[in-house]
Image (cartoon, rainbow, N blue to C red):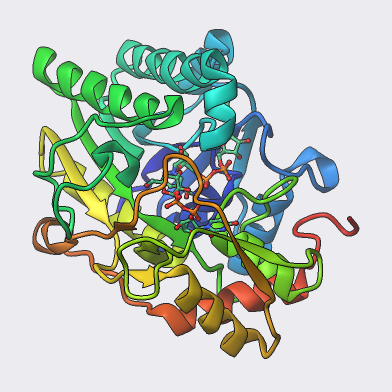
Length: 349
Ligand code: NAD
Ligand code: UFG
């Protein structure tokens, strides 16, 4: 394969760094742009996540510290490199924070994406893979969620920003020749690279279940709050479709393959198709870690749905992608990362 350079925005983050690793393994040349808003700076100013990717793969990763809102920096990057495609992860992602600071979310997620798309167009790069989310489905009207399920019923600015970007990209592909895009709707990414060197490193109190559970297992937090046990699910706790981050990362390589087919604008769920409850996840992490994970049941969290899981068939049919890893592997890899790196990428708390 001739050398294909791919711009990865937000490539120093959790999903981005795992994807950069898979891009390297697949023979692509990733170039990362990230403003380190949510990534730890390591030696020499390079994000620690990418330093670890280099360590694991034995390859170098080109990194540019810049904000996707900085038009001049983006233009300079596109002038320096000839990209064949862009994988766009950069953005803000905390649901609760988005309710408190809507304009920040719309500025970074929406304006940042517009800035990126305009820069791509100006440099003749019209292939995009975008990180969307199952949140665009809103409250499920039926399960499992297939790509034909109605979208747009989002209740928070974060979810709305994903929905708006999907619409924007779809309109652009319709309006202008030559654009191709794959919108990937992620379900619930968890786990870590099996090397134990790369994983999720949330700053502050984790918003999501699995980072919280693993921090309780490692002794960084005392007790898990389970948000409600009166949902109409098997044990009353919320059910989600957890997917190993390495499977998710590989989905992006499959999406790049699709873009080579002049596919127009496509949308795919990336999930396993199986839902697990909060208590099942706690049990699986107890098994993987050999630790007891204390929890208490508290009130439901605003905006949460009872159950959310994917029909992942379309990605299998059209991308040739299917999640390979199950619950035990997700928890084993998550635990290896958490145990070896109790403070994430920082040496101390
Ligand atoms: P993350 O926060 O670890 O990664 C995002 C990266 O983008 C960070 O490294 C951050 O520093 C960078 N960034 C933020 N604003 C930027 C800006 N203005 N300019 C340049 N870089 C910027 O998050 P993640 O979990 O890896 O998520 C990646 C993408 O996937 C996001 O778009 C997120 O919304 C989406 N997503 C995540 C989940 C999930 O549960 N993790 C689920 C669905 C969708
Ligand atoms: N939960 C707890 N305690 C916690 C955290 C979560 O009980 O401390 C429960 C939630 O109530 C839910 C389940 O664990 O039932 C999963 O919650 P997460 O916050 O891990 O994940 P969500 O499904 O709520 O959110 C994820 C992504 C969002 C995305 C959303 C919708 O993190 O970015 O899916 O697809 F918007």
